[in-house]
Length: 169
Image (cartoon, rainbow, N blue to C red; front, side, top):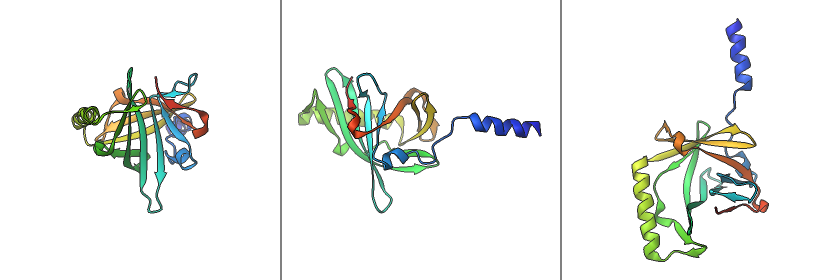
């Protein structure tokens, strides 16, 4: 009986996975990865769109390099599975790159696309992200092909589009 009571007590204080990890996105909020609250910066910003047929699209803006500032914008399909947001580590054909705010020339964009594709190929085929409470935000815990990748975990906060956050160092 004591072990059952202890299990219930621990369950009550253990961090809980959100019921819908994209609930804030359904309300129009943005995911700010690796936030710098003082300067309103993000290492990446993810927005999500939800189609009537149930498909979900992740529009990501990701800082690849701080100086010169190289940012990639891409859109990928995702699904919510077992409380995690999952998507493929492929499909960079439509990625757009900027360098210090200007569009990358076609040759540079193709080079960046090739480097990222090669890196993704080495990682695996699918990434899933689970969110656990951490301080004022969340810890995005990465799993690639079902295996934990704590080296890829990062803090996340949900922000309003009007809060002024942007992808920059």
